[in-house]
Image (cartoon, rainbow, N blue to C red; front, side, top):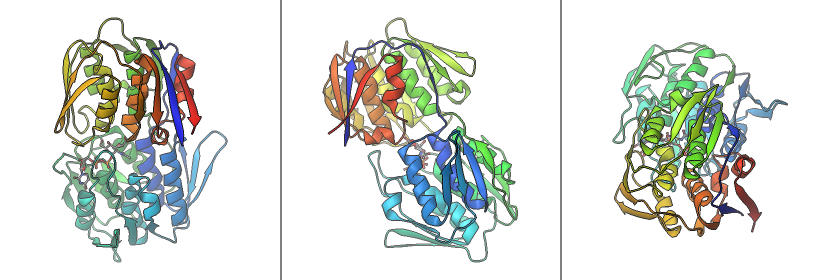
Length: 422
Ligand code: EPZ
């Protein structure tokens, strides 16, 4: 098992290129199930979650290869085992997003229930509600979702909102299934995340008929057949936000390439309140911080609200602000595994249910800490860059799920991170 030794405090400088989005790549990889033949996906990052998704598709019968330019080729001509096995899905809950495409392609699917994780329960009731609305018969057996639609799927008007608002992968599952359903489907309260818009654009390039992309109402007119596709996924706005916080927490100036600020307006708005300057430059942006950090209140919400996937990273940053901030987590109310770990680094965080009061401190102190969910783990790396001393981060595999060798991206900018196997 690997650990990180992160020396701090450091100053960063230079530029970094943002990778393709993990959370766009995963549903788009699943979408290739819908179109028999070889699809080529570009800018898909080299992450453990992507490898696990590839393993899942391989078990279905797909053949996957990486081209010389890093493109991911998926041949879905043969799908002879429509089963998403527990031992894979439990490692990567996004595996649930093969359910909709398998049902649409094969007329049946068996996919393990994802189970919970460090950020809380991961229910799929809205996924199942949407697929049932399209005519699937669904029952649970031994922890598996058994879905059948022997006579195909039929378009329907479906409300997909839940107690925490829209569902990203629930929208993905129903959207993908609806592309091959007979007739028209309207998904109301659809997720508006850029990753879902990217999936919809990819599906349209495959021959689907989707309108309302980027809005909470998606309209899909079913077609007979989709074609394999060559498609480049959007840049990863969460990785971009993570590197932006790296600049802010170390009072550095960084340039980010391949970063779409238009996908991150809530984040940019919050940064400006904190006192970080961020301006578009070329195909990315330049970020710098000169003075002290202002405290702000952050509430996570479905897109276009502040993204839950940057909550932990911003909490690390606000730990050093001049005053009290309030962080409210409205998407995954238990997503606070990083609070106790940051407090071990002399942060002053007090959790009250889905709210954390962040009392700014003058400095963070290095400590031994434990990674948990991938974004909380990234927050610990960021805190280590600013903390005095050498922070040891255990269970680094959590970080590798969502960041491609993050130490090899940060060290050229001035970080001092050593990966050790223990
Ligand atoms: C996606 O997860 C992302 N994962 C998550 O990123 C992200 O945190 C999340 O969306 C929210 O933006 C991928 O895209 C692979 P949800 P997803 O369904 O789709 C509740 C990361 O760090 N809900 O939008 O699984 C759910 O409990 C990962 O990259 C139901 O109640 O999340 C949560 O409170 C972590 N019933 C809320 O909705 C359902 O059927 C949002 O969950 C489904 C969800």
